[in-house]
Length: 584
Image 1 (spheres, one colour):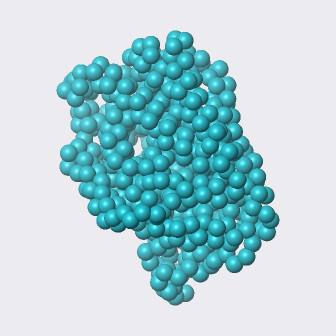
Image 2 (cartoon, one colour):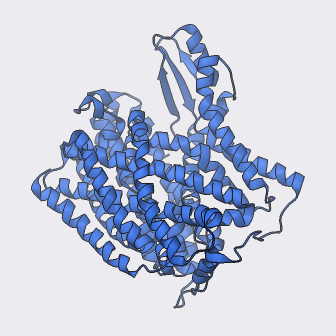
Image 3 (cartoon, one colour):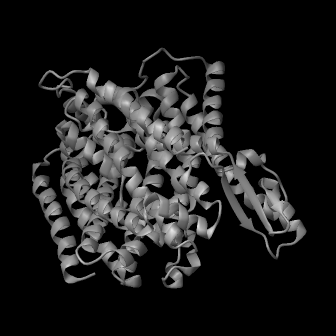
């Protein structure tokens, strides 16, 4: 990195952050801090949704995942997130928006009781702080490799987190949404430049195929086609026959000649699992629903996902292909020109930035990665603060205080959340594959929670079924994670091999959670369609809901209601065609 590169990084990101601090002066109430006073236009909500979905983790950790899985990972965005955004805007989030809710967890108490609400909050805190830790680790790798700072790069990461904490705590959603929109533009420029440079270096699509084939004959099919089965290989060289037999208890075939256990997962099952990962993201993740709640009208809410969806369709290929092209350039991790401690699949993105970009271009790419860090770090900080304040603190601990009290609590929680997430960093560095680790964790907590939201909105399951279904669904997820260890140590089969498969677990998690809720309802009865069984009656929670519900939800000008529907369907169709036809 030259001086000019650092000037680009500092000036571009500094100007955006300064503007966010200026806008923070408009924040005077909890409605302003948590929901931006429901004043955000559709294009700003859309840009913020996109910026939150694509962060420095996507630039680094997702590149590390596509380095292994290839373009099948694109299904998360092209199908999962696309369907999730459209479904959330038109069906899942809309009744919450109309009720003046501040968080998606509030809906769960209205539908299933306070236990479901608190459990939802805790699940989101666990999942999103893990993502924050992943983002911090990702930007560390960028600074450590591109800038050659080594371990000292952590000091820069801490400083950046501190800056994000300050403007998020002062301005809340309004500052976050404004800076997200500007940071999106910077991030797109940086990632676009890197794609063009690396694409040219590998020789386009034809050169990419040739380079992959030169390393391994069937590697182009594995990396460049979604419809290719996923093959996971575990080296068992040196293990005894008894140890190998125990490992096979959770699935796989033993290749005696190669001394490895091979697990094959059909392409269709991998596709379904990755689509579920993406689908759950905008529904369960309050980082996304919080932005939709801040829309100034229902039309703006629905139209915002058209902006974010169009950007995601257009940029998924350019962002996620970095890891695939990196596999062609550096096919063996242990031979990457890096210190041994940094030789991981997640290092491929910063390694390509270091080696293939020149002065000026390097600064723009790093500026984009830094902007991506800020855009999601501030978003998650504000989101989890709002969840903890409304769904735990104000609901169970201090119920009836003035509005400014809850505003201050939310502001002070922000640094605790952002810096508390650093506790995940040692685990993520040791894992040496951040995105795949995150995806594996999603099936344990997030998928059962997703199922409860869907069952609550789309069915009449009994009020008590929410907490019971979540408990059983999470129990299955935890048991699945423990099953390989139990089999290896004690030769005990706790689940059939198919239920232990990481990709099949997504389908089983939904079936087990939904089945439990249906069985509970068959015993206890079914609820009246559309009825919310709990509403706040008094105190700050109710007063704050009334404040935002009084804002005109129809918008100030006449707009065609058909456009969000037609465009939403078009985006879903394009995403499905890309996944199931063009790249299958």
